[in-house]
Length: 384
Ligand code: B12
Ligand code: SF4
Ligand code: SF4
Image 1 (tube, rainbow, N blue to C red):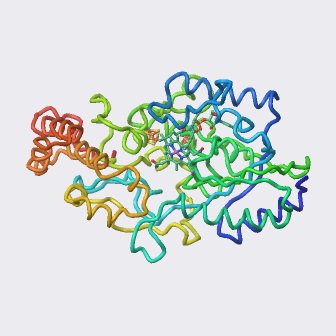
Image 2: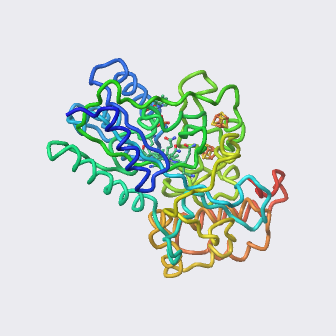
Image 3: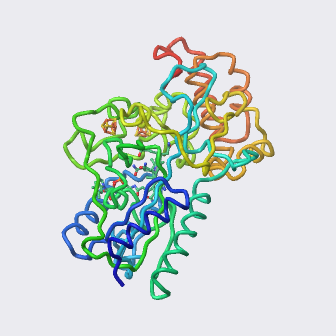
């Protein structure tokens, strides 16, 4: 079954009607084609170099021992094309790099979203998946039952950004995010893998790379996580150094040497997108899919610290923070307090340091030592 250019335009029009800001369709490279081999090699190299840290789901292999995410055919031999949809989640709100109250932490922009009535959190995975399923149903209806499809937001055995680039959503910037010339990079992606072949005239046109000689994201990254461009290689990051990984994915203790660099980030990190010139005029989200909850913007560290289990569940029910869980968020809050230069946090930190949660106690003891020492020469992390 072939998708023609008119079909592609129909898919894009339906995606817009469903609420996506951008969409496109990319072919899955033939197994053993030069581009499939290159994608696979690049992915395997990244994993073997240890860049994925403890994210074991990125390391799943097939029976032959090859990485599933290195080639989509391994998990879905029937896959021929990928419909990529993107939604803008930008909000009319400050950036993490703007001066802020030293007592404020930072939660990444993508995690601000609430339900439309704002009574609780909303995880973009659920919100996008629901819309993708609507589009999938329409695609099935148009192309018939012989068409196989699978919808994913994050969880599929593929690198969504690579398909987004090929589907013309945007280019992969030096910060390793997909950037669109009009929309910037505050985009979340969802994909529908399909068995539909693309007629040659149906291919979306990949976006031109517009990073040019800019290196703002690389220069601003506090942990030097953006690695490859400096060496003239493809754009990639060492996720084990990325604050998003450390605060969201990393279990247990965070390496001591990285803690001062985390600054005030308590969940995720937006720095390399905040500094990007393409985000200066990024439009605020047009759709109401992911409305921002104002209480999560520059949240007071002591508000987060004071939440007991039920309060945390109430505030973050349905939000991306729910999966990271309170324990890990508190570990991050302790580190942010240690970086704040605010000695008023000492009683809270000392209480945690004497507590039973070993990881939190250790992070809190580190923060106490950092606040108590006169050697906070790098000062409050205010706008880090
Ligand atoms: C693991 C993961 C992470 C890890 C690793 C990040 C990373 N750069 O890979 C961590 C936890 C650090 C992370 C952080 C964030 N993430 Co994340 N993450 C993922 C996830 C689940 C897998 C990504 C992956 O496989 N990485 C592996 C490495 C090897 O991929 P890579 O560096 O991009 O390089 C590959 C490709 O890009 C490709 N490639 C490189 N250059 C080019 C050029 C061309 C033309 C092509 C075709 C391919 C290509 O080759 C590489 C090897 O395969 C995806 C969802 C998904 N299933 O794809 C979301 C995803 C990438 N994350 C997303 C978001 C929003 C974030 C954060 C902004 C959240 C936050 N604020 O804290 C940060 C951004 C940090 C950053 N600067 O990238 C969005 C990105 C949207 C966008 N606009 O790009 C995604 C797509 C989720 C989604 N469904 O929307 N994330
Ligand atoms: S998200 Fe933060 S830590 Fe990760 S690469 Fe960007 S600036 Fe660096
Ligand atoms: S900050 Fe500059 S180099 Fe980095 S992604 Fe944006 S345009 Fe590209």
